[in-house]
Each structure stands twice: as structure tokens, then as C-alpha cells.
Amino acid sequence: MVDEKVRFWHAGQQPVETTHFRQVPCGEPDESDHQRMRIVCLDIDATTEAFDSIGPEGAPKTEREFLVTSERAPFLYEGKYGTAERIRRLFVASIETGNPIRWC
Image (cartoon, rainbow, N blue to C red; front, side):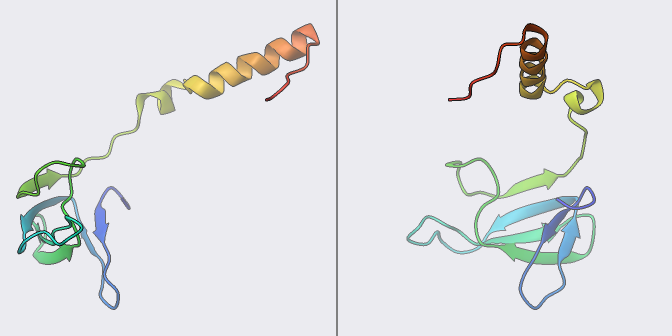
């Protein structure tokens, strides 16, 4: 995702950037169960293709519509980084008690 848009790249062509699109199956899945999808941009006048369905792994390869939104994760503005905060507390405790940290 770039600048709150999804970007579809194809060699030798200009990238297609969109925030609202529909995937439409093209043909049948190949031997690896990949199925080409036509991507119809609903916010701009463009179409492109994807080499496989976009969506949950193992889900049926079907027509789907996507609306891309971008929101900051709550921990980014709350200043809470679960794992990093636990490691910080470990460092502080090590310094305060004089006990070294031994990583295995």
C-alpha cells in the first residue's frame, strides 16, 4: 500500500493505484490453484489483472469488492508497544538491580 492506495504493478506498464476495486475471476484455476483476476477500479477509470485471488487464504476464488482505508494502529499513538515495553522493563530492572540479562 502506498499513500493509502493499493498499487498494482506490471512490467513495462504504469502502475494502477486505487482505493476501491472489484476482482472478477478470469478462466479456471491453474494446476497450482492460482486463478487470474481482472481488477476493475471503481474510483478511477482503469482495469488491470492480478495473478491470483485477493482475499483470505483458502477462501473461494470469487468476485469480491474491496474498499481500502488506512488507519493508524491504536498502539502507535497511545505509545504502547507490547513486546518492546516488556523488554524496556526488563532492561530497567536489570540496571536497577545490577543483575545481567543472559539471552539464550
